[in-house]
Amino acid sequence: MAATKRSSGSARAKASIPQIAWHEIRSAPIVLVTGPESFLADRASTMLRDALRGQDPSLEVHDLGADTYAPGELLTLASPSLFGEPRLIRVANVEKCTDAFLEDALSFLEQPADDTVVLLRHGGGVRGKKLLDAIRGGAGGGIEVICAELKRDNDRADFAAAEFRHAGRPIAPLALRALVSAFGDDLGELAGACQQLMADTEGEITEQTVTKYYGGRVETNAFAVADAAIAGRHGEALGLLRHALDTGADPVPMVAAFAMKLRTMAKVGGTRGSGGQVASQLGLAPWQVDRARRDLQGWEEAGLGRAILAAAECDAQVKGAGRDPVFALETLLRVVATRGEGH
Image (cartoon, rainbow, N blue to C red):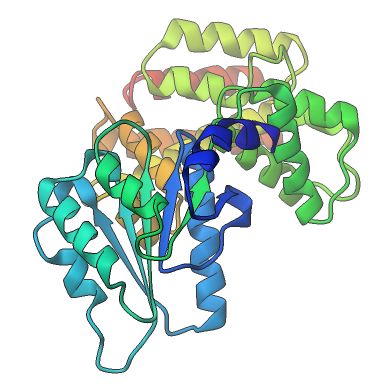
């Protein structure tokens, strides 16, 4: 992860605690997760939770929002429990923390609780600098996990290659290049595409496999079409869809992208709490919750239900139940772009 190393160089010189990449995350009394790449931060948080739960299945996990923090919450959660279960306390939005959180967190650093790991997510900015300086100076016995943005194609390619390598799945170099080109703007969607290819195929993933699922002009992919339609931009979505189909895109993954995003919106709709709290309840990543909440703007529950039914019907049509998969896709796009009314 070259970008991570370069971005953390200046900070490493100033800190007296270990500073490591997101994929090297490990347990410590205080785990400070910094950097702008939310997807990597969410992935690191999940890795830490799974590692701690593997050590002790009785692990208690608590999520707090530093921006909505009430005095005493952190200290209460960190207090010894009756049965002494280990705890992981994850605190989001430290860059927007309240004064009460800052005071309690600085107090907690003076005497961290036994069998408790506190993960602090700070996305950037000067708010909370006093707390960060204290942690980086060694207070609390913490570590810092750097989640730098992966801006270069080579860095994103390294990330995607690691996804396949960890799953034991080979991918051809040209296939990897095509996949990274198709999902260059969103690391979360790149990871999702990697997982979908591994779930839907067997053996080596070739350039032809990537073209089948995410074909067309590299800037035009299934998620770009779905995003434009969900946002109500019918003309743009239709243009993207027709261009993708004209240049070889397969209708099946197009429908899959619509269905995945609509189902996530349905899961998240009506929920309350921080992205981390809702993600834990629904089995999603926090970035998925935040994205779904943005996508839900302007939608009503009834319209979303109709759009999901339209996606199911379109899925059947493009898989053989209908004679014209392009017409089926355009019909689905119209229903989604009108938020469930265009049927």
